[in-house]
Structure formats: structure tokens, C-alpha cells
Image (cartoon, rainbow, N blue to C red; front, side, top):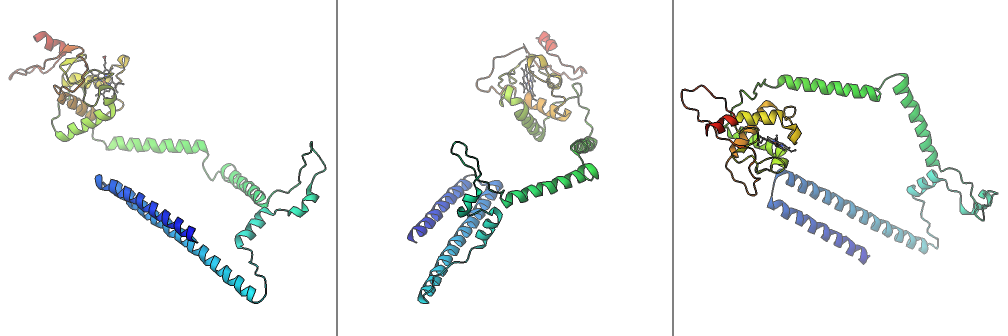
Length: 309
Ligand code: HEC
């Protein structure tokens, strides 16, 4: 009895200390997700505790009742016999074991080097399962192949592809038409759009160019030297068409023109940020063209810019 109590107290103690550890973590960085997890965990722990306590109490009650019954029977000079539990009855029914005493009748005639075999019948639960599979097979056959009531794999696949295509078409139709390309792209200044560009960059480009733009597999994007030109139009074009033979894919299929404009603008803002361990300059020095008032020429090209030096 004492042992059980000790165990229960120990479990309580351990569970509560773990909950305490959780709660401390939560106060360090409380966001709604953490709160959700802590609350769910707490409710779960409480539920488990209630369940465990109920089981213990029921067990105690059972022992107590049995003791009483035995005492009563002893007083009357009878022997107390417990009724078979429902569980035991069910167990016997689904297994239908032959009693040990009948084993002699079950032994087969064969004797395999001293190993003998019992001719036990299949347990009822196994047979029931087998009948269920037969019924399932008939229902399945009828539903899928006789009455065509349910779609087969291929039909299901085609239907899903059609649904996905329809969803994609409606999404495309609802998108505002954007016709930004390398001739019309402009440097965006809006902090929100630059933030979006930064996100695109960190998600797609940072593994080769580093989050800081310092360069890795791909070149440094923060210096004044460019392989493919440093104007917003050049950068946009590099992103759009890529340099596939050098490992820089074309991002046109993956990014919308707006996203490419945002990320190109974000790259422009990295210029001169001098990140630590930046890759050595590659390509040619790019000097932005002075757009003097009155000139209409806006085309910028790295070679042109260098020539002007
Ligand atoms: C798998 C690696 C990889 C990824 C991912 C990648 N790049 Fe590149 N990038 C390169 C390489 C390599 C080059 C150099 C190409 C060359 O040598 O001509 C390059 C070149 C560039 C250049 C031209 C630099 C110059 O000096 O002219 C720009 C701009 C650029 N990448 C932007 C991006 C952007 C924006 C993304 C994400 C949308 C991106 N890159 C993703 C590897 C990558």
C-alpha cells in the first residue's frame, strides 16, 4: 500500500517539475504558439493525472470490496469465489483455447525428430477477421468495379489534377497584371516592398549569396564589381534569365515580376554594406550613370559606365 502511494507521489512530483520547466521557457519568449502548447500540454497532463488517480482509486476499491467479501464468506464458513470478469469471458470466447488436459487428444501422429505438433483450431478472432476481409472484398469489388460508384485511382488522379489546374487558373486570373520587365523595372524605395525583397532573398538566394550578400557560391552582391552589370535593370535581367551554365538559375518561373523587382531593389540597398568575410570582387567596376537633368538617356550598361571613367 505504502509503495503504491510513494509511486503516485513520485509521478506527481516528476510531472509537476516538468511542467515548471515548460512554464519557465514560456516566460522567456511568450508567443501565442508557445502559450498554446503549454496550455495543451497542461490540460493533457491533468487529464492523464485524473485518469491515473481514477484507476488507482478503482483498484483500491476493488481490493477493499474483495477483502470484505472474503471476510463475510469466512464468517459464514464459506469459500469466497470471485465471478469471472467480463474481460476474462471475452478473452476466452475470442481465443477458445482447448484446456491443457485435452492436449493429448490434439497431438498429431507425426513425430519430427522428437518434435510433435498440436492440431489446434484457428482462434475465433482470427476467423472473424478473415470473414471481415471477405465481406470487405465483396463490397470493394461491387463499389469500384461493378457499380462504378467510387472513382478508381486514375480517375481520382485526373480529377485532382483538374481541380488543381482550375485553382491555379483562377489564382492567375485574380492576380493583378504585372508587366514589369528589364526595361521597365525601377528601384523600389518603399520599406514594405524592400522587406518583401529581403524575404525573397533570404529564402531563395542566401544559400549561395549569404544573407548579408557577402557571397559564397555566388558572387558578392555588396561591392561595386559586377559580372553582369550593376544597374537595377542589369540585376533584374540577371535574376530573370539567370546564368544557368554558372549555377545561377533563371528565376522567372519561380518568382513573379514584382518579386524580382523587389529582390533586385533589395540587392541595390546592400551596396557598400561591407559585410564581414565578403567574397573578393568579381567582374567589372560599375559606376552608376549620373542622370544629368535634360538628358533623356536612361539606359545603363556596365561597359558604358566603365568607359565613361
Ligand atoms: C545555387 C546558387 C545560387 C542561387 C540559389 C542564387 N544564385 Fe545568384 N548567382 C550564382 C552564381 C554562381 C552567380 C555567378 C554567375 C556567373 O559567374 O556569371 C550568380 C550571380 C548573381 C547575380 C549577378 C552578380 C554579378 O556580379 O553580376 C545576381 C544579381 C544574383 N546572382 C542574384 C540572385 C538572386 C536575387 C537570387 C535569388 C532569387 C540568386 N541569385 C540565387 C548562384 C546562385
